Length: 154
Image (cartoon, rainbow, N blue to C red; front, side):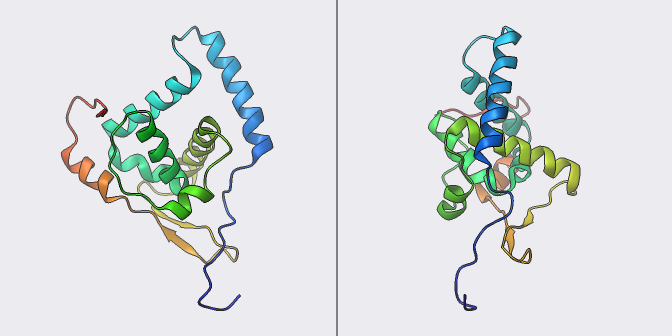
């Protein structure tokens, strides 16, 4: 590969087998919880509410953010229109719910490993390819966040 070639993302990619096992476990836990609605709707609502209260927490999802944002938008939540299609396609599992599970696992890793607000991630093959996550839609939302913390829906 020459210096002008695009770098391959290789770090933090979704693992299909792991996500299938986690999904099965989480579905069992959800059905035992007695909560109303579907597992998917609950997961989306939890993430949307968290982001409505603290929009800059989107960085916790790291490279999964763009796929998460797309899923939220598809469910009627409004978090802006900006996106990064290549990163979104790369950091997406084989279903929306598995993408959200992968994103939540990355967020947990982010909270344990990085300083709050860290938005630069080493995703490239050699570990030196830095990806800077910046979503100006969410930065503006942080400035405008309402005290109620209610997610905006379309």
